[in-house]
Length: 180
Image 1 (tube, one colour):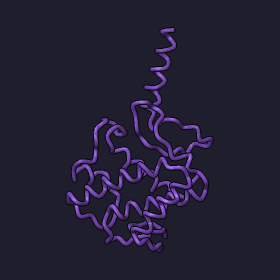
Image 2: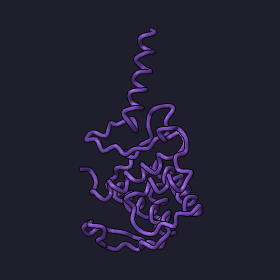
Image 3: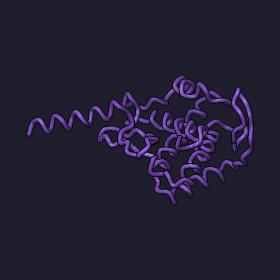
Image 4: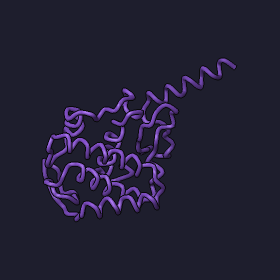
């Protein structure tokens, strides 16, 4: 395991959230336009959920911010992560809940959902930055995909967000070779 389990879990959530954007989703359309879609994404997310349009809009803004931070170089990512923590007045603390052992949070469960998502993502990104592993935060190499992924492979050579994208690119390359 490259990162701590809670860090990997938070990074996978960022990927899931980010890949609801148009061009990154399986359908190619924005898959975070309704409260029902937001609820489906947050099935295992605890804490305050207002379930209103303002919350959906704030989560969509957070999604766009996290997509941007994902692609920053290490030093610029530090600035963005520090800003997210500062704006949320984040104060780290240890907690246990929902059957989980001690783990860290930096916002209370009553904080707005989008703020908690930003802070939890920032806390996970701190580990990535400290370990100098920002190169493992990637955008899919497929020309027609904007999907994000975290490369947890041993040698860090993963290029595609999904097997589907990898197969599609490889098939296109194979057909091009066959024509020659």
